[in-house]
Image 1 (cartoon, rainbow, N blue to C red):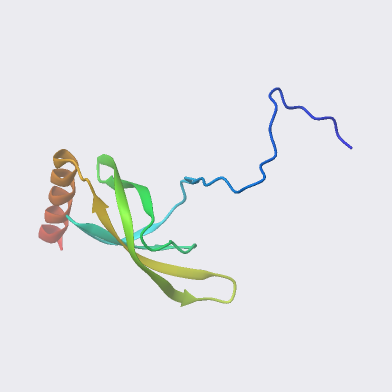
Image 2: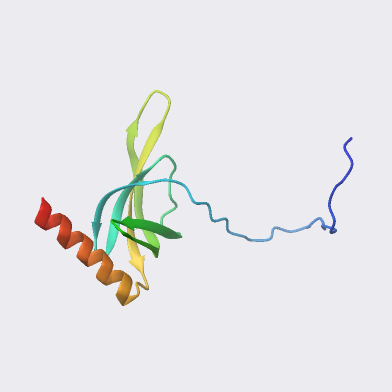
Length: 111
């Protein structure tokens, strides 16, 4: 057996301790509006779960809190699954909302 390299002691738990894990993983934003986004990912998102979502709005990068409203399989490939999810923004600061609205308006004018 290998030598234990821990510098601090851990304790075994007799009962389950709840926790959450936040992982930054790439997603493809397919639609965006002032209230939320539709995205595609390689992993399913749990309905009603909250996530921090980093959005690259041209020269502005913002981080928003978003709640998963729906998630379903969008495409089944031979070696992969693509999930499509709708997320609604939660507690969006006015500055961030203004950046999103400006981004959306810019895309509407260009398209």
